[in-house]
Length: 231
Image (cartoon, rainbow, N blue to C red):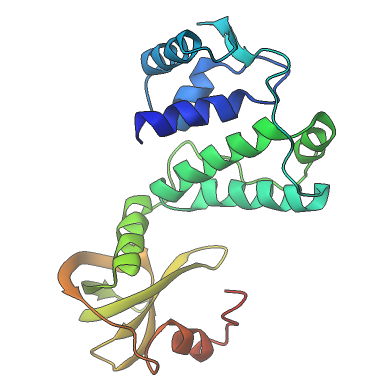
């Protein structure tokens, strides 16, 4: 994360709070050390940002430094918070970190009555002590999907049968219990779903692919019976 982005996020995290935000929570969300947080806050204070507090106690913005609340109603905000909690708990490391940062921003700018509503939500996806199994692999597959890079897989299916595949990755889907990679399989010449936890070896090649109407994402979604507008 660039330092400028980190400073911006610290300011957003402090906005709208009535109680001090501990430096340790900021450090965990930003993925930096406490020392870095202390240094960043000190630099913001020197530049004129009205931050009050100190190391070991926490930080708040001086009263009057608030910004207008987000234009969402209570139900919409609860949906955003719950969705971010699930991404934080079950996605790869990269998206989980961004979900945690998004939650911090959302909570920071809520007026008291809406903050209380989201805190009363009874839908939880508690952060895990350990990342979801295969979190690093999910990140690697996500990058391949975005960059349209052909993958070579050593894969073992549910029955334990091994195969070597070259696939064009189209999307990642979470089915409530496991992730799957939706792809066009060059061996089977058809769409296939692959469980990341059953990939024994993964090679991201330098070869890129162009999506064709008959084997691109829209065609895949039709094949699995998903609505492209809702997927």
